[in-house]
Image 1 (cartoon, helix red, strand yellow):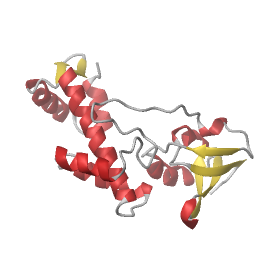
Image 2: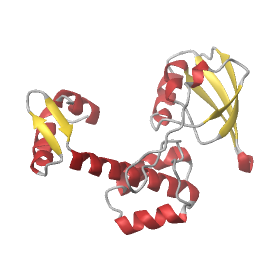
Image 3: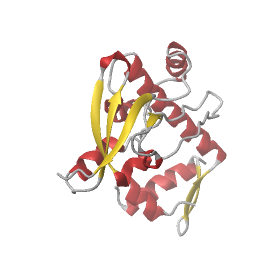
Length: 197
């Protein structure tokens, strides 16, 4: 069970708003809700949640591959669109993209039956300095966290991304958030240094 207070904090809304929303979801039999303990998804709720994740990640993939968005531009667009696409559009996007198993951030896209393909990864900070690594997954939160840590005078990991198509960029990543870092098949050389701003 997830406590109501934790949901309110995560969503940035009042506890009253969470209680109202949970009541509606319970009426739809998507959750089991105990006002004093919290809520958990039912089997039907889990199916809807996995479907929303599929929509979101397919939209992100489509925006990057078909429309030329950057991987760091797609999350909010997908948030706006994920509730609006039909099952037919979802299927056609999936087919047009070549049935992708991962989104641009490296997160698995649920298959039509709800199953996920996972691949093992290690936190980037566990890579020795100077080693060659392939970044396979990047947290959506990374683009929001880097500017915050850039002004805190934290210790950083500097990564120079080199990818196909001639696009190169360097990114400063705080050690505190490198465990969330990953990406979509970039070959990188890792170097550790203290970067103060």
